[in-house]
Amino acid sequence: MNAWLQIFSLDLIIAAAAALVLGVDAFFRIPGRVIGWLTAAVLVGTLGASFFLDTTGTVPHGVYVSGAWVLFFKRVFLLAGALGVLGSIDWLEEHTPHRQAEYYALLLFSLCGMMVLPGARDWVLLIVAFELMGIPLYILAAWAKTDGKPNEPKLGPEAALKLFVTGAASSAFTLFGLALVIGVTGSTALSAVPQGPLSPLASVGMLMVLAGMGFKVGAVPFHMWVPDTYQGAPTPFVAFLSVAPKAGGMAALAVVLLSGWAQHHAVWAPALGLVSAASMVVGNLFALPQTDARRLLGFSGIAQIGYVLIALVARTEEGVAMALFFIATYVFTNLGAFLVVHAAAQSSGGHELKLLAGLSRRSPWLGAALLVFLLSLAGIPFVVGFWAKLFVFLAAWRAGLGLLVALGVVVAVVGLFYYLSVARSTFMAEGESKEPIRAGRSLQAAIAVCLVAVVGLGLYPRPLVEEAARAASAFMQGH
Image (cartoon, rainbow, N blue to C red; front, side, top):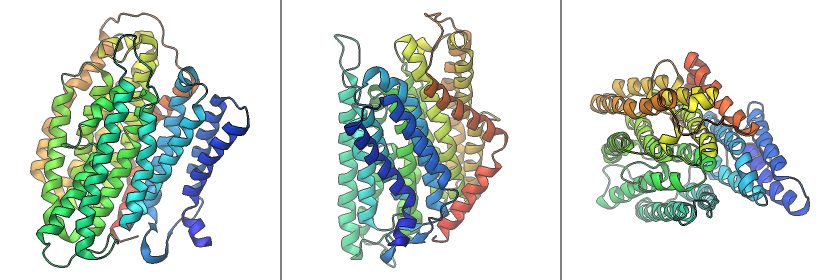
């Protein structure tokens, strides 16, 4: 029992925090803003504790394995959760002052599911963790169900419905595929795979599971929910949704494909390569005509997922390490971009790109922050996004994926157009409003942390690269 508590200590802290938030809100009259700051403090404290607590080990029957790989992802989730909470405090205080604690509790429960995913080595535990991660997200997507201009459709319920329907479809695909895979292997262990050539039944099951997980990460052709959900859900929540669940999905994909099904890569690698190529092309091309900043960043995120999938197709330790580096840096870059857009929209009254015009004059530091985040997403030297793309492309090139790398480079150049067009509008165009943008302290703190991380890791990425390499090495060795 003590070993179990040790292995799941970080997860239990977050679960206890979620229960405590609900209990405190029910029995004590504490301002929601204070609960938000305390929630962020718990997440930061748990992140700090992860450097001192020994959480390595294996639970009975090998259904869960914890080591450097799991710890890397848990730290990413805790960071994303803390930044997501900080970015939401002011918005919740203004829009739903009496339901703030519920929002934080749901976000914490979702984090619990994410934190279990990287270490799951049994299909039952993996699916339960996926659902624990996903179900609170459906509720949070509808949090702004009454927001919007009078006499116009409310986008919040539509956003939540599309996220729920695609999430249900994802679960259905995964479970149908698992019925075939488990039926063939006779075991729920991820490591239980047929020896020798796969039967058609097992191959179909494997591809169905891959499709189900494709929905979770928003990869093409399973991306339909992304732009609409991003446009209709509350932007502070979308900032969290755009990074943390995708990181969880990528962790699960890596565990399934590179740990469980590594010897059958001839079945899934071509399919994953096509998904990667389609995601890069569709994400970048469909972002070009967008007029809403949230939809643009949504299609941008689809393209970014395509870059990460290249590293998984490589099936090498270097590729896995660079995928981890990419995911960690993407948290700061994309979350920061969404929070700046949210701050600007709060003052401008909308998320249209034309309302970002003149942002640098209304708030020089927010304009500069958005420019840095856009440059990082575009992969311009020397912010961290440049190293993330470069390292992924190098790992894929060394693995013999020259065509995918060439395609990635070409569409990345296309991405420069819409990223830099937004930056040009921010700094060179005259906006409709001249009023200064006033963002709350918590929102400013979250943006500042993201900005420092993007610039700092761009100038000196080595510590994070080495940490990602250690995690990848442990994973590839089965720890």
